[in-house]
Length: 65
Image (cartoon, rainbow, N blue to C red; front, side, top):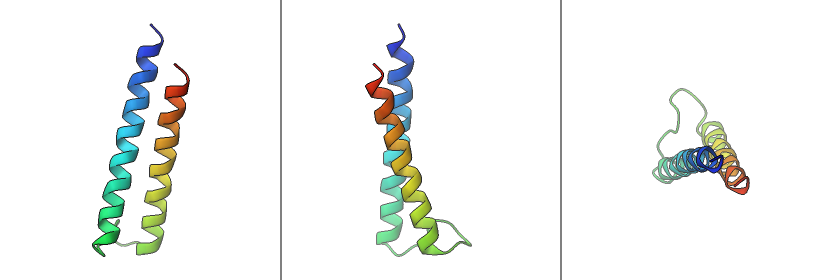
């Protein structure tokens, strides 16, 4: 019974992290801003770091099964 919430949380974190990483990579590849009004390098770095953190947390949730 306790594995249900871990699977759900892991999937949510992994899907969001993967989507954020794909979106950030697409925006950087197209030379478009990741966040308006912020340095392009800083916004891409922060978004990329956040995506990696979300993917790591999702993987950690899956190890708790």
